Each structure stands twice: as structure tokens, then as C-alpha cells.
Image (cartoon, rainbow, N blue to C red):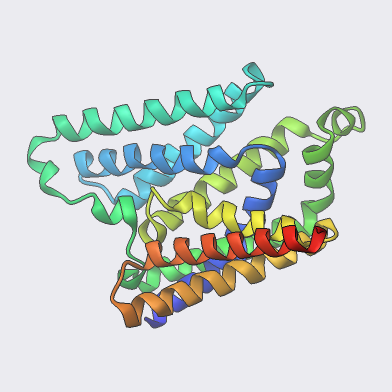
Length: 260
């Protein structure tokens, strides 16, 4: 539980910050796409006998770069790019697992749904390092990211390296997702990234306020869900996701009532 609480705290720092930009850039499905593609990385790890975390990192980073390339082709139809990559990742994972024969007896449940309770201290350290990297990146590159997010053409005219920053953002997001998979699972990692950002956007009055609120919501949701799952003997990732959904519904309901 100590490792799980530390992991939840680290995730609550970097995942909502990335999630805010994913939502604002209309790339919410990118987290879902990369999490599904990560299964291909797990499959490669099982087939080659390597660490699934290492192969997942490699595959997800390559997918993140390729996703940016697809975004330039289908600029106004980003959902096409995400659908193509998601389908390719799942198909590749199934083919590799089917051909690995003897290695297929390895259960993929922990990668699909995650198990933050069984996370190792080494994985906690990696998540903490990720949190530090994301925080430092936001401190130094917040303004360029802000400009690119809301007006990419203007940023390009002003000399901002739009393509390089977009690729770097995708890579960082891909690495973050790969590190979150053992804790959150490929099927639920998207919710943990996007829901706090969605809640914060309903409450925050400014951009920086949205970033701050998203971190607070993520911290409360992850740790509350983790503690609730411990006492109720339920899957932690499912409990966390449901609590975040309840918070989103409550926030939307209160916001709607306030407008009347």
C-alpha cells in the first residue's frame, strides 16, 4: 500500500497536466490509442523474453512519433489517425501473442486492467522521475505549449518549433502512458488522464487554475479510490475510475444548477 500510495501521488502530478493539453488539443483519444498500442509492446516483450516495460516504452514512443505524422496528414480528421493506430496496435498484439505459442500462458490481465497494489518500488521511482520531468518541462515550455495548443499557425509564424514541440509532447505522453500501464491498465489509463482535466475545465476560471485544479482532483480521486479499493476489496483502477466519473457528474450537475 505504501508503494501504491506513492505511485498514485506521482501519477496525480503528471497525468492531469498532460491530460489538460490532450483535451485542449482535441487529442483525448491519443491516450487511449497509445495505451492500446502498448499491448503490442507487451506482446513483443513476451515473445522476445525481454522486460515488457522496456519493449512497451520503445513501441509507444515510436507510435507517438508516427501519430504526429498521421496528424499532419489528417489535420482536420484526427480521429482517423487514432483509429488507424489503435487498430494496428491491437492487431499486432494479437498476431504476436498467437505466434509466441508457449509464451501465451502469461496472463495479460495485469496489463489490461492494471494492479497498482502490486507495483514495485522501482516502478514507483520511475513514476516519480516522470513527475519531475513533466513538471520541469511545464516550467520551461509552458508558454510555447500554450501558444501551440490554441493557435498553431501563429506559433509557427512567430518562430516556435511547432513540429519539434508536438513530437516531444507526444513522446513524453507515450512514455508516461507506458509507465502507468502496470498501475492503471491499458483499458483505464485514458480515463485517469482525461477525467481530472475535464473536471478542472468545468471549474477553473483561467488556464493556470485549470492545471492546478486538475492535479488536486487527480490526487483526491486516485488516493480515495485506492483507499476505498483496499477496504472494499475491489480492483483499484476500477474504483479510481468510478470515483473520477462520480466527481465529473457531480461537478457537471452543480455547474448546471448554478447557471439556472
